[in-house]
Image (tube, rainbow, N blue to C red; front, side):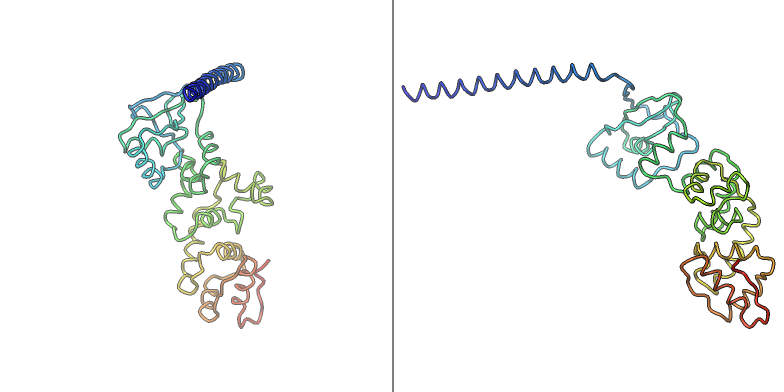
Length: 292
């Protein structure tokens, strides 16, 4: 009899505890929803579709990343529909999520999406800069696809001279030894601040000064390759661009001297200029100043 009373009390305790917790939980959720209703509002609706043909790539956006698409496609196959919605504008141009969209197509899956009006390429670039950074090549391809002439020519130049880095190609086509931008008043201030130089290129306002002269410089650099394997190093390229503009410098003479005197790797453009000057003046009675 005593044990029965004890068990009844124990059972009552747990029943009351359960009811109490349930009531507290209900009150908590109610209070939470009331708080959200007072402080939050609906901004964008999330839609779902299986018709992926309704979406369009935005002109100027960077290409999709095949490796990333492959991983996302595998995730969809294993785990189902991606919960992260893509962002599109009112024209159904994809602002953010082109890799997710392509992965959904490959996995024959639907997708969630949000419509944000008046978004365009600038917002694409901003979103990508805050996620996986756009590099210089992404900006070049984007502005070239938009039809900006200087970037189209730069892309052609880069593809033709792919043994040079894109930064080197910018310098070669700009006839600048380091900044990569022309000497117009608009950009002179940028020379003093590398961050401003990058900003000019990323904004799509870069102008190449001479693509033909750039190709001539590139051809000369390629002639040095059999004599020096660092012919395409940035510091060497920048050094030679500056020296080639010196009227007293003869490139054929330099090539001939380079077969006699070895050119070693240097850390900076200044060091390369000094070494090139030493090689050029080898056995010369009258020394030529090439550093300044």
